[in-house]
Amino acid sequence: MSEQILAVPGPLCRDLKQRRDAVVARGVANGAPIFAAHASGCEVVDVDGNRFIDFAGGIGTLNVGHAHPEVVQAVKQQADRFLHTCFNIVMYPEYIELCERLVDIVPGAWPKKAMLQSTGSEAVENAIKIARKATGRPAVVAFEHAFHGRTLMALSLTAKGPAYKAGFGPFAPEVYRVPFPTTYRSPFASEAECVEAAFAAFKHTLDTEVTPGQVAAVIIEPVQGEGGFNVVPKVFFARLRDYCTQHGIVLIADEIQSGFCRTGKWFATEHYGIEADIYTLAKSMGGGMPIAAVVGRADLIDAPIVGGLGGTYGGNPLACAAALATINIMQREDYATRGARIGDQVRQRFLQWQSRFDIVGDVRGLGAMVAMDIVSDRDSKAADGATTAKIVDAAYRRGLLLVKAGYSGNIIRFLGPLSSGADDIDRGLDILGDAIAEVVGHPEHLTA
Image 1: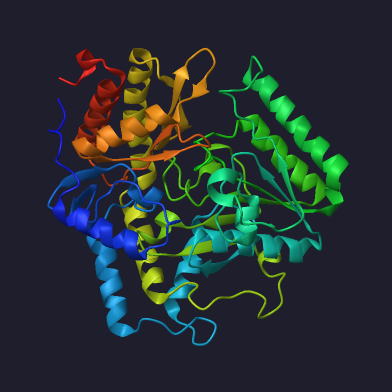
Image 2: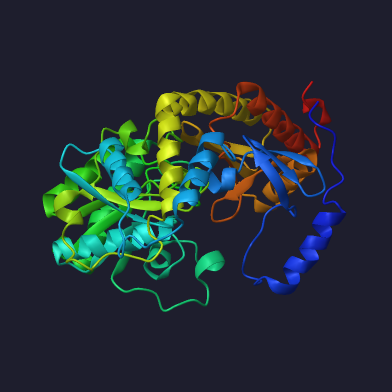
């Protein structure tokens, strides 16, 4: 049996929620109605003293866990020296050192360069700018179910209209949308047929709507994050890489959520033997601090003229210090192996629930980027966002924090810290299993 059901939210959280509603913009979404007092590793303690296991990880930003002591110490030491200069005005060594480390660990046999930003959206914006400048072409191709951010170009590339785009147009021009080769709800009998159909649709769009010679870049998530942890089939990725090379199109891998050991490799493209021309990185790179990067072929990154790239807070010294400490931790403690091990542990439990509960329609992902697809009917595979919301709430009341995904909000995804021990993961999984059993009305499936 998992933890006792909590009396949440407590009085302090309820008071803060009232204050939040009075002054914070309505459009800013929140998950569980709690307010953190402190956090460490995979645990969050709210202002009322309630303890929660965190399987959301700041939406994948905390692979090394909450407040890792080495990251905290690195930030404190940097804060004692200086907080900010703007790298465009006064340079500092930490920016250079972080770019050197990124150029070293990001896949690619060619010479590489990097630039730093503060958010994943900024990384995407700059990657598109670089690709357009380097190729002299205007068009960008993105995929169904993609999420690349919320700023103008990034939001134009994102494919979740009702939640993120309604009423915010017009969007950036010259963005073309093609099918993502999702296999679970595909009308085709095999992955091979699904891949063939998706790639044919990709080529048809480029041939009939824009022509390959006008396409600057194709941007793709190896594992879609907000879109529902859909994994690119290997054959499709290989054909996409060949097509982009043939037509001089820049292939951009958005590894903002899948990077930094989440999938059991440093970067998800390593599972495919694929090297993208440009990588966009963020989230767990900073150990909880806001930092992002564009890393790629030096000839592409150097295409913009001096002054064509920049930003006031890009590569902030505190965030650079945190990122350097985070990379050191991940390399020293072999976080790629941790990601693979935790992924196996979580996937095994998800598959057990799939065999027990009809609402678990699919289990998918790479490494510790793994999810369950909740359905109302296995035959129709109809997405069931309402039941998913009930499961997330039941888990929260038992002391587990989760984050949903997918167009219909029916994907329960695991993004817990990779610093977590096996016992911590099991405790969280026990809670989730009990939450599922509670919602579907099968108490016999409560954990022993």
